[in-house]
Amino acid sequence: MQFLRCLLFTACQAVSTLIFAPLSVLAGLLPFHVRYRFIRQWSCFNLWCLKKICRLRYEVHGREHIPQGACVILCKHQSAWETYALPRIFPQPLAWACKRELLWIPFFGWGFAMLQPIAIDRGAGRRALDQLVEQGMQRLKQGRPVVIFPEGTRVAPGEKRRYAIGGAMLAEKSGYPVLPVAHNAGLLWPRNSFIKYPGTIRVVIGPVIESKGRSAAEINTLAEAWIEEKMRVLAPRSS
Image (cartoon, rainbow, N blue to C red):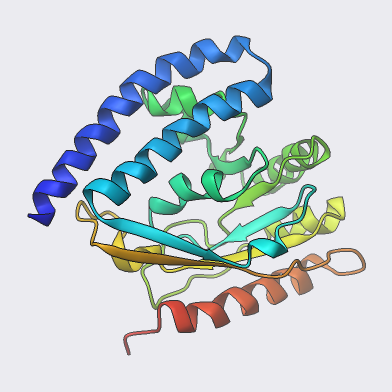
């Protein structure tokens, strides 16, 4: 039965993408904030489908820590779920740091490009970090929080990868604070998995980490320590 539920969700996801993507490109003629609110409805619709069809819900703790202005969001990456949920959780228009190849995906990439993400050429070496900092500072000055997955890829629950310095470097150079986010979406929607299990995903938003007067290495260490401490509770290691 859960397989059939997931099959129905996938159909709804595909149809909504086929509808929203061309309309999102047309929405490029509108002011950015109007365009963002429209495209954001795609995420809201799919979260609603997850709740109604797959019985997959979520709860958020720490909303009071979300600053009114821009910040650098360093978020755990376990699943595709957080890419749907973060635009719903955060009130400000988000700027996503992503690999530029995502923009080449038919339909999805076209719509995503209209959100003005920070598209990074990962094969550019040091230049990729420069791209992140340069474009990230532009988005922050526009009042948009920048979302970065510091581990760079989806990581299974109970595991971790090295936290890249890019997000912390952006915070150091810009002076904007870091907002750490932990969650256990990978327990219910595992990476590369078709099956979404019923249950409630827990998201925890931490207090901001001030970047002024701190090095990128120190900022990165503080963010990693907070996120991984929360992950030991949300998704403990199996071993």
